[in-house]
Length: 132
Image (cartoon, rainbow, N blue to C red; front, side, top):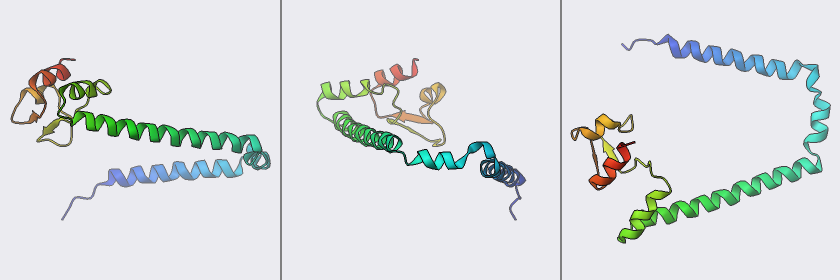
């Protein structure tokens, strides 16, 4: 029979109490002046700002996805120049490591212990990443 852990239950109760206190403060505090909030919430300038924010978010996501695909193709390329340039964007990329302990990224000790981690990268890259 498993041991009951009371810590997560107590933490959930505390978080629920804080959430209830927040909702109660939002609803009952007269200084929020909800009529003013609703008046300006759908104001033309506010809606225009929301529109531009969402547009910039979509544009930046498209640019990021295109850049990520290009860098991924460069990293898998047979051309050594493209492979060499692709890590410049993210020099601390640990995706080339495979560790026996999947719960943590490799540390300096893991990299020196071949029984725990090994790399598909050349040894010079392994040394460069873990040198600081």
